[in-house]
Length: 291
Ligand code: HEC
Ligand code: HEC
Image (cartoon, rainbow, N blue to C red; front, side):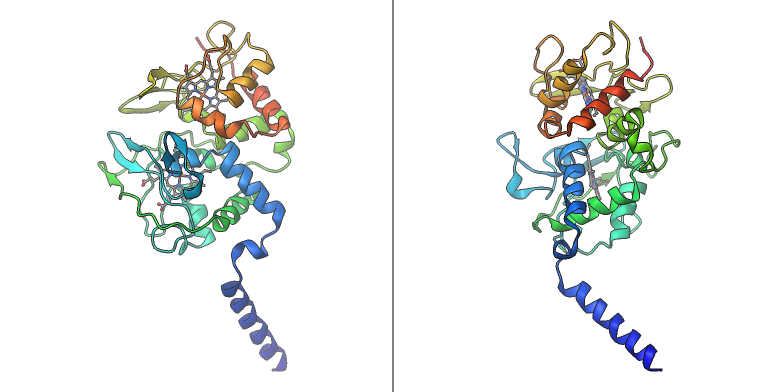
């Protein structure tokens, strides 16, 4: 009897503690640092979720909603407000609900999230990395910003990604090629570097790394490059240093400045850890040559 009473009291205290202490104060700093790295470096979430000021990400409004509108035959959407604001951000979402958005592309109210958000590639995330992202998102300043509501033009999206992507293990992340593949999924390289057309989803069968997605921006029209190990058409003849420079500085092999959107990602990937850059190179070299 006394035991149950004590258990009830401590359960009640636990509830109170969870409610009153901000998430950041009780979160392990290593987990937060990992979340910061996943969100702000390899994941480049801000590239779609942070507003811009004069062409640059406005870090005073970090993660409070994207600057661009993705207008596709299936949907017209903007990057959501990921800050802890209860009305316009993720403040009222549970950890499990945030993870379900990241892994399954579903919101708490059941509506699907347009697959321009690369959630199908995020299915590879380890449980610790999912926890890290959630912890980090809860630690950023809450900003009230009502993002324009999504418009869905077809009932079901053709989620254009391979089903084979499954959750990675910490053991696999110690092997350079697998670690590189994992980072590439978070960096969603194949959302752009696989063949696709405006009204068709990417074709991953035989085009993994072939490039081909087109982008039009004020900088002009640009096609995502072939990043397979093909000697002439891909990265086969590039040195490791040249590949790393393209990712971290947005410069091609011949010194040409890469165009957006690739250029913008360099602003995030310039902070990649050396072992992660090595792993990405190892993975890129493992992609069979494609014409
Ligand atoms: C290529 C652009 C892009 C990238 C990169 C991206 N997102 Fe998104 N995300 C979107 C868009 C667009 C939406 C809204 C889609 C819609 O309304 O159907 C979205 C929606 C979400 C949602 C659902 C929120 C809501 O209120 O509906 C979450 C959570 C989310 N993203 C988290 C992340 C995280 C965390 C990262 C980085 C690991 C990330 N996103 C990277 C484009 C992106
Ligand atoms: C949002 C789309 C997008 C994403 C995501 C993306 N890229 Fe790119 N990438 C491009 C485009 C477009 C170009 C071509 C830019 C140009 O030619 O100016 C490019 C160019 C490159 C180049 C230079 C190739 C050359 O011949 O100059 C490399 C290397 C590269 N990407 C690797 C990657 C890797 C690795 C990832 C993931 C970690 C990635 N990209 C993610 C769109 C993207």
